[in-house]
Every structure is written in C-alpha cells, then in structure tokens.
Image (cartoon, rainbow, N blue to C red; front, side):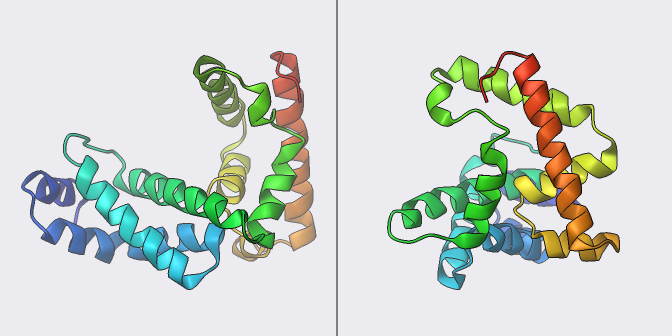
Length: 185
C-alpha cells in the first residue's frame, strides 16, 4: 500500500491505518528500537508507543516520507526508554555508539539554550549534506539508527575494521567542522 493511502487512512481515523503501517514498516520500526534497546519487552513497548504516537500525530501531520517519520518517532521513544533504563543498568552496544560520538559533538551541558541546540543541529545537517551519499548513509545508519558496524560492513561487502575506520574519519571531520563553526568539542 502506498504511503499516501496509509496517511489517508489515518486522516479517516481508520484503525486499518495502523495495520497497514505495521505491515509495511513494522520490521523497520522494530529494528530501529531493537538497535537501541536490546531488551525484547522494551522493544515491543516502544513499537506500540510508536504506533500510538503516529495515531496521535497524523493528523494534523502529513509526513513525507512516512518511513522516516515513523522511524524518528520510534527512535525518540527508544532513546527515552534507554535513558530511563540506563539509571539501573548499561546497554553496552548503544553506550558504545554514544561514546564514539562523544568526542565529536559538544556535550548537552555546553548547549545551554534551545536556539543553540537548533544551531548545532543545523551545523550537523550541513556537515551531512557535504558528505558523499555513501558516507552520509553510513553515518546516519550508525549514529541515528544505531546499526552495528558488523551489519553495515556485511551489507557493503567490507570488513568491520574498514567500516570502523571510515566512521572514525567521519567523526573526525565532524569534529573539525564543528570546531570551525565555534562549537567547543
């Protein structure tokens, strides 16, 4: 089913919209949450919260593309759940991803206002826009969707070490870009 048809079902407040959304993007939503959370019960709850979030936000939103919108909602719920769980225990895989980026992006404490956070987001967006498509996809898949290095390497037919080196270099470029724009890293 086309995304526009699914969105039309949401606007009609048809529960079929959720069924079709799950049919088309359920695997992607589950994978996005699982990459961050790991715990199957947390993932299931996050997926359900994602569908409820879509139900509550469409309408008035008319997302295009739908998959990005749904995955962003899933990622936000997963990150919130991750932080709630982190107080009690550590999730090694996602902590590793956060640690990788720690030296390249200013800490939240350094970004004092919402305006500064928006400016930082815009700087990162400019950085990503300046990358080759392949590097941009690699960066987003690793640091937004939390895909593993092994998975990214297998999809590209490269060694995990080669992908790790590429990610290291991309983080270095990001750090230099942000430093040039005046962000303390």
